[in-house]
Amino acid sequence: GRSTELGLQFPARIAGEDVVGHASVKAALKDRVPPGVVQLSARADTVLLWGPPGVGKSALAEGFAFDVRAGVRTLHAPFLTAAEMHHACTTARAASIGGSRPAVLIVADLHAAKADVIGAGFAACHAALSAPLVKDASEPAEAGRVILIGTSSAGPEHLGWRLTNTLGHVLRVDLPGKADRQAFVTQLEKRHGGDGGSLQAEDCAYIGKLTADYTYSDLEVLTSRALALSGRGKVTTRHFEDAMALVKPTGNLNLAPVVVAPAVEPLPEQLTAADGPAKPADGKPADKGKDTEKKLEGLDAFFGMVNDILPPFLQLPPVIWAMIIFGILAHFMARATYRTPKANKNQLRSRLWEDTRRNDP
Image (cartoon, rainbow, N blue to C red):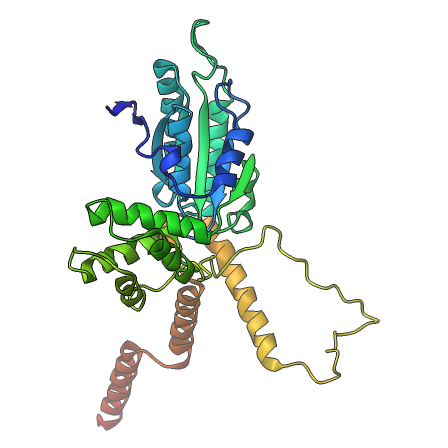
């Protein structure tokens, strides 16, 4: 049965042999993070699995934990703080010593987390794992060992330098090949179709050929839709063809972050007085629209510096800051240009008093 020790699950939900495909990634995990040894180092036991969504990155991590007989815990990066990651590593290390087995922490969806926060979290984990280990001499060598496995739909170049500096190994998880798709459809159809499945080997091979750019998640949805179209009866390739019109592949989508901050800002081109202003290569005058865009980028950078100084609840978009500043300036300009109603009223009173004095005999 499955047991829990300080948040760790043992055994993992998925065995390595149940994860279809990715033989090279499985071998690389066991080769670069070998089981049955002491903690190599905080960085050497940190792995990044990245690739398109739905290709089985988390399943590979859980399968690895099952194969090395480790307790496993999954954390979701977008909701983590550095303090929470430090606490998770500390408790995982204590549970590893108590359970006499290694621990695997899976940090999922790194691409959706703030780069600075998650980078500080991994650094905090490394600090916790680098502390001296206190355990009995009778404990096995791998007791107290914590392996960090992060999953991301974006490559390491999109995750920020603070996080990439903590990574010991980076493994890419590609889309499943034809044979892997065939094996996965066969597994799903037998699991959900009942009576050992109704598709023949050549039918599964035909479906595997048709489903290029389909991830494992796409194939699971596709198989469920095909079974629904068959009325939970005998499913055929025709049902899969009809289901493909409803379930489109997502493996060919570019899901990397659209806006990526470079690790090092490029320096502006420095011009000497002799060279004068830069001229375009074709000899045409520079586009004014581009100059305006550069000015806007400068304002964004300025207000970004202001936001860095302020606490999070006071940070505003650059457009809002500009509206506030121009609103204040407009207010003072209006006060300087036009008289207030009170001033007009006092002026009217003084004029009435002068007229009254003139009319007195």
